Image 1 (cartoon, rainbow, N blue to C red):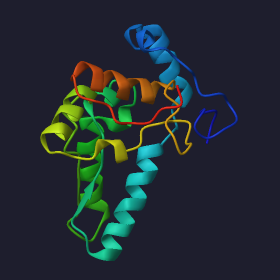
Image 2 (cartoon, helix red, strand yellow):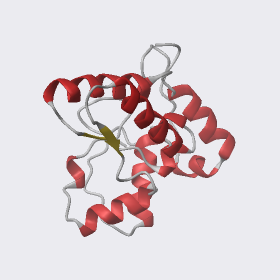
Image 3 (cartoon, rainbow, N blue to C red):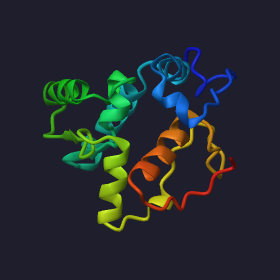
Image 4 (cartoon, helix red, strand yellow):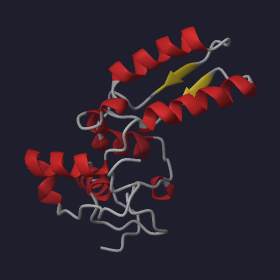
Amino acid sequence: MGNSALTSDTEIPNLVIDDLNNDKIAKNSANKVWVPGRNLVFTSIATSFAEAEGAEIIIVGWDKEEAANFPDNSKEFLNSFNKTIAIGSKDDIEIKAPLIDLNKKEIVELGETLKAPMELSYSCYVGGKIHCGSCESCLRRKRAFKEGKIEDKTIYIK
């Protein structure tokens, strides 16, 4: 789809953690991994499955930090899509985003409080078995654990 580094042969940007504080570099990286209509497509498919299975709720992992660069992670998108489902589905289905008001640090802190096995979650844009440690998503993950003063048990290549 398009020229996204996540769906084409375009190279995924490699950053250092300080690059996340540089708006120009972070925005450029986000633009390179933007997949047009990604959550529009995924939530549409999830809605079809939910209706077919009689499910009432679809849970997504959208958060405040991602919404800053990706509009299809925002509250506005969530609310709008739920309105669309209400019109376009015969069933009463709702998409819920329990992390939508949290940044990555707050998510890690919540995970620690809940004793969630966060090392089993996956964030890397590269898609290997082990997190690369240098893509924007890995760096945001590393920063969240560091800022939250929580041990990061994730295995990274770098």
